[in-house]
Image 1: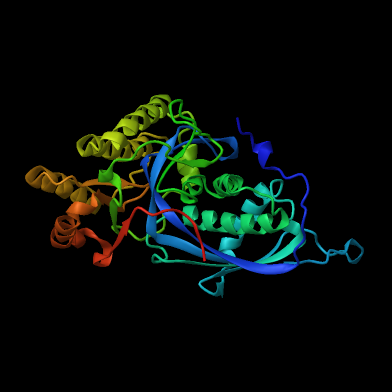
Image 2: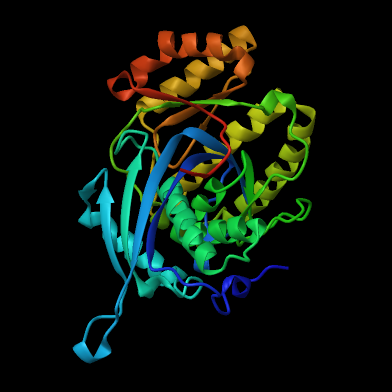
Length: 366
């Protein structure tokens, strides 16, 4: 059984003065939603997600060994520059600072180097697509690449498990953006290897129906999130329906095990849409309460239901904690669904914008 202490290194066997790495890491879309957390970014319930392919963060990490001189009263805190799309981004720095503070015990070399973190997203900035998952996953991959130089005996399994563990400490769902196309995070009795500490690749059979599944993201509202994820998760403390919700997540994850094996798209749709609506229902029934959907979100949902009833095409929706709609469908119906989106749904998108994506494989070294 893994514990967090397993990721604290003893000693490093090598030294390195400077260098750089570059990784891309994708966003992901949860099918069973993680909503509510305990201390140290531990999830209140398990979740499972499709890793995306096109919506990703690309982060380059440069590092140079520092000369720390206490006699000269030089600070021995963290030293880093942060660039977003090549330009300094001061308002991102506090989040990185907090991340470094959380992971220092697991990466004791962090204060030995000055880092230049240069990051960019492949999706439009402020598009309403969460970039914290892809961003923290990409950063964790870079730090693990440096640790592997310092500890060349590190195994590949340990490398990816620790990367996911570190990413989780930056943003919970980031642990599902490291490896695999279907990823489980959180302890689930009948999923081998599942843990609260990091994401694991779904270990059982996945039917052909779900291979190369498509996700078209309809940008209904590109504004800043009405409620931060941290505030949203905190609303689950003392929520009147929290315990039932957490139990429901376990039940729905159980259902997906057999659904992924037998390829039952009708049952998949029921679980995924129910999970999306439950997430929003929990926000509507919290104190304080929030409605994260916009009128156009509901227009899209109703149009999808009508289209599915009329055509029997297995298209469904899911939602994050916002107004945008992820339209999910098998690859073999792509042409008809995309035509439907263009004919009937883009009118509800801000500036008629949407992003076509699909299941991906996780983080990639560049």
